[in-house]
Image 1 (tube, one colour):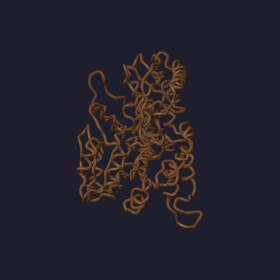
Image 2 (cartoon, helix red, strand yellow):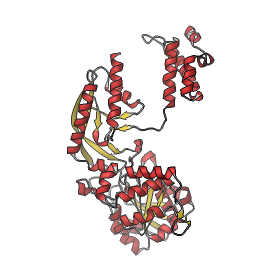
Image 3 (cartoon, helix red, strand yellow):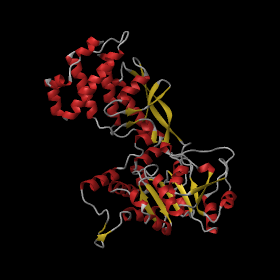
Image 4 (cartoon, rainbow, N blue to C red):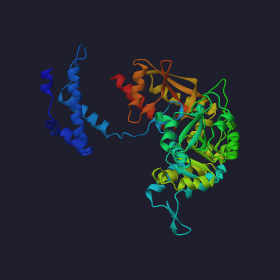
Length: 469
C-alpha cells in the first residue's frame, strides 16, 4: 500500500502536464485544480479499499489524466439543470413542479432582457404597484374583489394569519392540520404567525357545532384547510365551506380557506374527480382564499391570496409583505399564464400540466408506440423493449387519489441489473428519471416533453457502446 501511495503524482507535477495545461484553456483553472485534488483523494481512497479481486487502482499517467478530465467535466456541470421526467408524476415537487407555458417563458425573457414598468404607472407617469399587473386578471378569472401574490402558499397563509389573528385565536378542524412538503405543518405555520390555534372536532369528523362552541371573544378567524394532499375515507364528515361562511357572518368572523393546490379548471368536466375550484370557493363567500401558483395552476412558484378588498388592503400594508413579495420574473410568468386562462381551451392546450392531465389514452398510446419504435434498434442486445398500460399521478399534493390511465415503455436489461440501468440514465449530463416496476425500468410518456426521447436514445447508445467495449 505504501508503495502505491508513493507512486501517486503530486499536484504540481500534474499541473505541469501538457494535457492538464490544455484542459485549463477549456475550463477555469480553479475548477481543473479542484479536479486534480479530488482525483488524488479518490485514488488514495481506492488504494486504502483495495482488497481481494478488486486489486489496486490503475496509477499509470494516462489513466490518472483520464480520471482528472472526467472529474473536471463533472465539476463543470451546473448543479441545477434540466432532467427528463419519465416518472409519470406530473407536478413533481422534487423535479421543479410545473413546467411553464411557452408564453410564460417568453415573458420571463422579456423581463430579464429589458427594463420594465414593474412599479411604474404608465398612464399616470408615477410610481405604481407591482401587484396591479395581475390583480385585475385574478379578480376577473375568479370573481374575487381583490388579490395579492407572495412567494409561495405557506407564505400566503402565514401573512394572512399574522395580519388577521396575531395574538388571537384561529379555529381549525383537527382533520385539516395537514403537513406539506419539507415537513412543514399547518400548526407550525400558525404558530409562526402568532395566531393561537384552537383545534375542533375529530380527525375523521368535524361538525358545524364544533366551530360554534369554540368561538370566544378572542376568536379572530375561522380557518379551513382543503385536504388537497390526502384523503380520508369511511366514517367521515366535514363542514361545507358555505355553512362555515354563514356561521362566520353570524359571528362577524372572517373565514379563510387554504386551498393548497388551487385550480381554475373544473377537472370533473374532463372525467376526473371533482376538485373545488378557486371560483367555487370565492362564490361560497370566504373572506380570503390562498393557493399555490405552481401546482394545478401550472405557473411559477407563488402564493396567491384572493378575497374581500378590506382584508386584502390590510394584508398589503403589513410590513412582512415586503419580505414575501414576488420578483419581476415571477410576476411576468404569472401574468402570461393567467392570460391563457381567459380562454380555457387555450389554457388546456398551452399550459403543460393541464395538457398532461387531460391527455387522452389514444394520444398516449401513439406517443408510446413512437418511443418504442425509436428505442428498439438502439437497445438491441442491451435490453428488451415493450409496452404496457399503467397509471400516472398528478402529484404536487393535488388530487391524491386520482390515477390517470397511461401507456408505458419498458426496458428489461439483459447484461446489467435494472438498478444499474436506472443509475446509468440518472447520472447522464441530462439525467433521465423513470421508475422501476416488476424488474423493468419504466418510462411514462405522459410526463415526457418534446425532445426528451432524444436524450434517452443518446444515453442508451452510449451504454450499448460501453457494453460492447
